[in-house]
Length: 269
Image 1 (tube, rainbow, N blue to C red):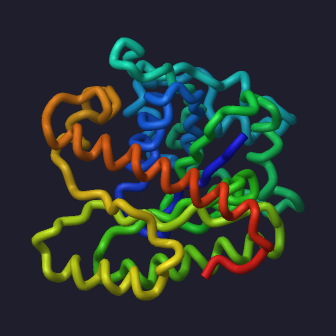
Image 2 (cartoon, one colour; image 1 turned 90 degrees about the horizontal axis):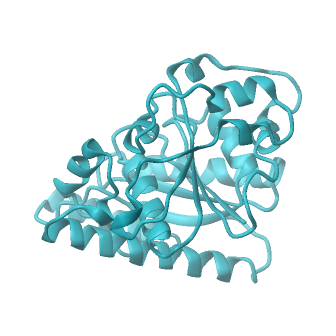
């Protein structure tokens, strides 16, 4: 089983878009996928067609019993007929933002409630809030790997550096199995000289972590999310291109994680 925490320490990078794109790519390959929406904004929950869920990740964390999150799992409404297998969702809600605890072991609560709720071949994607608070720490403790999402902006290098540092701290202090799945650069506009410069900065700083392909900005992405279907089922050349990129990105992540598991433990930088 692979659990990947998808995180960004700044808003607006398209972290949820990357989570959904990878979920669609994996499901289209026939893999079982679970999306854990740990962001109180609940955007992934909405995009996956879940409206007013009776039981959420907030309830599961409040309960805290081992494996209790199984009671909150719901199937997404993504169409199976489009070649995408049904994706499971552990939905979120606004009240999650008020969850806070300083009790010993509180950062392991998500790991506990997710215990054995999916099969050994399940890909679990945890959509984190855009901060390094208790919820993101829970995700990093529960995860096998962490995927950093950034955009090619002025603050991209700083945000990526902070995220990499956070992963290293969690790995050395709490979760020794945690590895870096890589850095994804999203919302790229190829004609922007500023973005080309920032992308070069990221490549120079993190040559071993930056993943290819980078993801270009496409109007089909928010359109498909608003319609409640995976980008892989959306019509048009732009949707086909970004779907191909998500599939290539999934392969790059799989390859990196396979290689990382055979290497000695070390820092992420």
